[in-house]
Length: 335
Ligand code: 13P
Image (tube, rainbow, N blue to C red; front, side):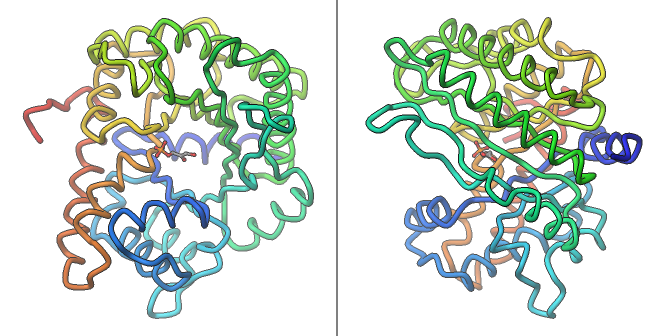
């Protein structure tokens, strides 16, 4: 493992003013996103849409890396340039989702465990050959009556740690993503408590396998009330709770935290990130958004080639707003 190289890549991914585009929707997820705009998800339509994102002019000013899905890393531009090469040529680091999605923890359980350990080493080697320099593994944690259970936290944390270790051994930067879901009606305080428990468990497992934190990034949820909770916290409350929750769990050598958006409205996610950067933290606070970067793009595109420019404008706009939020220079009235 080349620790210096991993640290260099991790630092590039969280370079000031830049963040990551999560474009690694699985077959099922991209279908859900396309259903909303009346577009059929086929490998070719998926390719056309992802090409629209990657070819957005000057997007490398704001985007440091892109997380790809297995299908996408095997696809190319209209000119036949593999997407991972196209991105690298434009100064954007290609990454890859390596988990294989989630399944029930036990039969009938509302909790989930992430699959994908089988053949992981071979996949790392193949993706590395295809140009990927970092990877992602997502675990989901559900809040509910008596949930999450210790079993769920332990198993998912151990899997995240095994994945991260194998990733570093293959000289790729692991993005470790424990996502506490926004589903349900729980409060911000409950989310803070569960996020803290989750991060404690995850870092205990990472520690036990000997992860080099300088060559890793954490992709957590923000501490926020659930979707169905009508007591909306202010961005200041969300930012303060998130950083309070992180302050004694995040190792000092971690180059950065790249938040997921988790179903927040795009402007909301941007504003919360901005607020956190206003407060400041000892490590970079950046983004690795899927929906919060892509929702307006999908709407503008609607599967029609004549909307290409409109959709790319929407993408660069969201990327720019999030770039400003990286510096605490975003304001809601810029929207
Ligand atoms: P969202 O920003 O839409 O939550 O997606 C991020 C991601 O990569 C989920 O795994």
